Length: 247
Image (tube, rainbow, N blue to C red; front, side, top):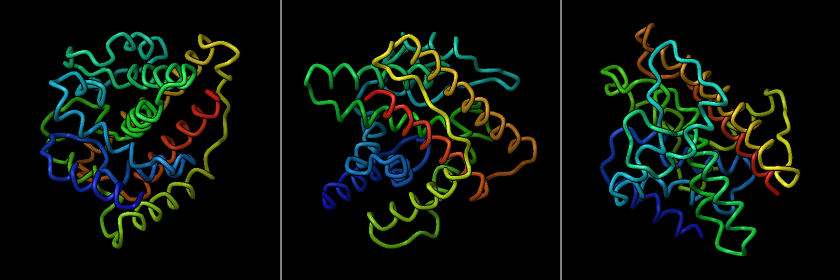
């Protein structure tokens, strides 16, 4: 398993990508912090897919929100139909989260291999907390995106597994500071689950967007470590709760 994790991460790191949103080990650490660590390497795969999917995957990773936008649950659900669409313009990250979770539940319930959609959903939920994936891709965003992607990995050394574990531990520490919440169980009705999930996605999207534009206003090129870990903790908590509710 460790060799597979290392191979996936190395392979992805050799591919060019503009605006990836969080580096690979960070994506893996979010999944680990959410209690899904056995398959955390799958969270790195969606960025690799972008290189081969002919544009079908790109728009699932971001949403270009002009300053002043207020994301709502209805906006989130309205994006679901655009999942895997090459209509990438503004992006449809929020709907991609809902759609990937649907894919996971459907595959699992049909006895099919459900780990891949689990990895996609985990990746998108982590992208949700990256501020510059929720703001317009302007000059500020382009100039500072890559450095923000790797902010929590900077200075963390050692093996792939050791680095993921240390980042995950920091995320879990911040998760303890967050107010807990419960999503409705999907078995009691997907419509209610989707509505509450969309509201949570919208809340984190607005938080992320606000941080991104605040950074731009202050000419703050890079998130502080505390800001980044606070964002990642929000993603990990949402991921953890979404999978609990889907069981």
